[in-house]
Structures are given as C-alpha cells and as structure tokens.
Length: 119
Image (cartoon, rainbow, N blue to C red; front, side, top):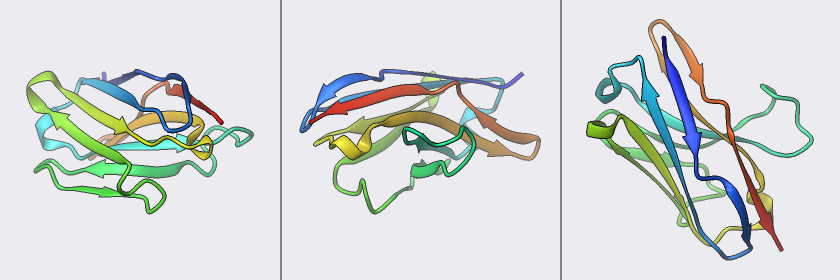
C-alpha cells in the first residue's frame, strides 16, 4: 500500500520560510519522480491543483514560474523523503500542499499540509 505523509506546514509571515517534508512508503522510492502540488483556498479538492515542483529519480528538478528562485525541491532516497524548501514566502503561496507520485500502478497523493502566509 502506497502512503505519502506530508509535514512541515504552518503559519508564517510574508518573507519567511518553511520546509515541507514528505515520507513515502510502499514504493521503490529511488525509482520514482516526486512532485509537490498546491491547492489554493476556495478551490475544490482535486480541481485546479497547481504543480509547484518536480524532481526526477536522478535528481533533476523543475519548478512553476511562480516559485522559481524561491523554492527548492530535494530528495533523500535513504530516507524515502522529498522536501520543499520555501523561502521569501508570499501571501499568494497560501495553499494546501500535496506530495504526489505516479507509477505504473497508480497516481498517489498525500493528505496535504496547510501553508498560510500572512501579509
């Protein structure tokens, strides 16, 4: 059974930083690309989730234009974990952040972690 468990969300002032973590079980983690998505307030779950960052199995990363230069995705295969370091946070970064991976058998999501940025 695949499980993705996020942590690290919270309330932070604009300009501050947070680090999100996601621990994956039930997959061969080192072989999977991992991604972070977010769902802004007022949006229906599953609708219009925004891809924030993705990291391949080899460590290559890509980012949404809205977070480039501020967010960094990384992974630790020994810990089956993926991270999202978020710096210079803005009020528009307020959202529920979800960890995600896709493989042959399915498309998997964590339960989400709330990030609230106060201005």
